Length: 189
Image 1 (tube, rainbow, N blue to C red):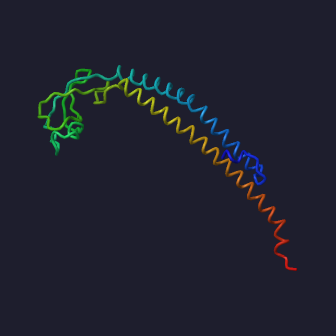
Image 2: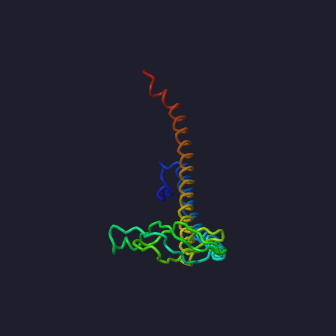
Image 3: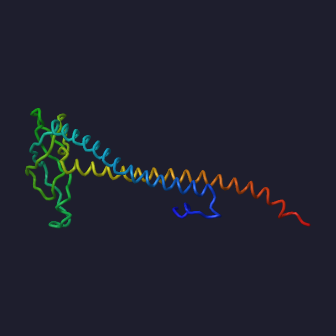
């Protein structure tokens, strides 16, 4: 792209325009990336912090009792078994004092009658815990990284569109030039 900016007798004006557009978009993308990352990352962090605060006021931890044995993992003691959870029926008391039953994901091989900690929403349904500070941070960073990709994809799309327009103009100019030159080449003496 930059070699098009050098003087060359074969370089057309459109080639220079395309090179300058590419250079301008590259510099604009590089300049816009940090600002976009900070703005979007900060907005996402504030959003997820508000969401976590709302979740903390509407979700309550409580103890649930297994109504049946949890399934056994095919490979007990493996790293996968420590992470795997199986749906099992449990009984718990909601924030209003009502006894409820639901299905919760529990560790493998827990016997019937075991107690586990679950989170319950104000409506009495099982839910996940509120977002932790590390989850808020990772989601905000993910949003900032996606913004970076978006800025660069937008710049690449703009360059592609400009190149397409310039290419069409070049092809039209070549067709016009050939229309003027072709009769001299195709006529026989």
